[in-house]
Image 1 (cartoon, rainbow, N blue to C red):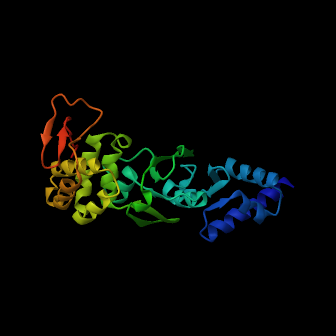
Image 2 (spheres, rainbow, N blue to C red):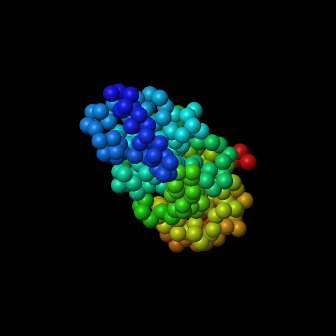
Image 3 (cartoon, rainbow, N blue to C red):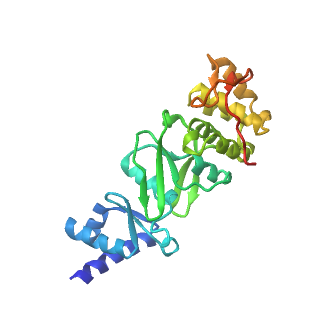
Length: 266
């Protein structure tokens, strides 16, 4: 009886994979197997122990093809869209993960970074790690779709990625790391779209980004952003609020107090 249950479960994931469906809910498996919830749970546990499936979230499973057996999971970008759709939460790949999609891959992120509207705990599936970062006005952030072997994933545009990197610099290794990534990203940034991206975030983010882009040699792309800052910046912002301002120098162009030295690795 046990081997029969296992055979049916194997058949279920084989059929699913053959049809291009690599994620499923426990209820999907139960319906397909025609057994109780307890028997379904046992069958899925066996498949998990064999490394054929993995469960990044309760009741949600991914089929692990041979090429990803060493990960013990599908790569995050191949299951996060389906998981977040199941949870009914708007989301996009951002920060270092988005920078990678746009060709700025100076440092490979240790986790897949996902922007969400509500706080969520990080998840681990096999050796795959996913971190969630809360982004206000998430519905207004510009995204674009990238193909993966298992579907598509929404990623912040180069302009939105640049804004987020500055706003969440503590999630990416600090301003030095941001400056390094911007040096690789600037050629993909459209000056007018950058202003639209800035409108989804606090004005000080735009002030800091403009300064860092100028330092990256992209001052030919910051004109519209500087106009936006001069119109909307009500006060002088600080480049790094957590640092001392004792020897800060004012940058009038960006209405910014420069209180740290930022060094790019490029």
